[in-house]
Image (cartoon, rainbow, N blue to C red; front, side, top):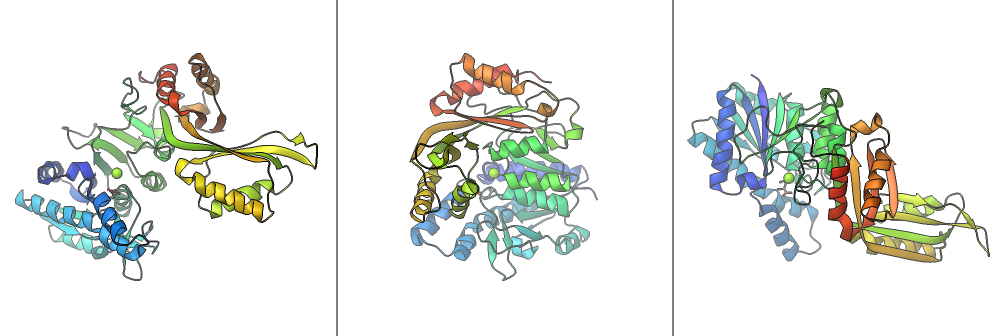
Length: 417
Ligand code: ASP
Ligand code: MG
């Protein structure tokens, strides 16, 4: 039997009516001849509520009990989805992670898959079950404790099942009808993409386009899972939504496919830090140890200092809520005598803006177009970094929306390739 994985996010199963709507979509695929594995999220808002209860009960909670509580949201939806399907005469059964069993590492709240054995579910398909409804976001450790995968983890569960069961496709049903060239809330010319390459999606997902958990895209890319994002609130067919696929499956691409942004960035500069071998390691080692996610890094050209040896400025960016931790790491390193600098300058009013596209590999002048468009709006660029398929800049946060629109226009993203 051909097999499909269908994943329904929190808003798609927010109440009994919506579960019925989702079940209707599953039933249609069964009627088309598919066996289906349905992966469900918790009803929308549920996981936040459960996390809140844990934090109120125990501020320094035991992560094993956090997972025991937080995983329960998905259990409820899985059972309700199976019941709804049964009411529609579709033979369905629910599975919690441990029943499959979905084996994960014991890194509670951020567990990773080790194995998804097919035996139990395949045996039920062989007995005539048409739909296995699996609770997303959870698994079981080798100690036999319930684990969860980190927020948004149901996407990753879906892709992992699609890989393990060699599904024809992994359809992610959500509250938007696909992946857009940029955030439609910021730019009314944003256009839905029919296709996007895994690598582009990976950049967009990690830059804050919240449609898919980043790890799910990594996994899909590694196992070549045909991944699709589509709306659970519309009538859909095989061509709906956005297909996330291999670069080779995209006929022609523009230089830039999308514009992404992240509001909560901060820029930190160590002014006049000594310029000597090992200085970058002495700065970024402690930052990593403190759990600071450093993103952009710029080291200025070296200058002769009046006093000692040559000095330079080192600038990096990190999420705003990690600034305090980063500052402390730098102060501790100074106290320990491993680094010396004149001043630590922090700018928390910046935003990161990126253009992403596999087409950059073959199109010249992308950076120039980007910088001209920003200049035309009088927007100053504070930091620039590039990779093979991405150019990112830091700008003043107050210009973010304007900048997104300017770049969307400059790269004509409202028009198809
Ligand atoms: N319910 C979990 C969350 O809200 C997992 C998911 O929906 O993907 O993060
Ligand atoms: Mg999600």
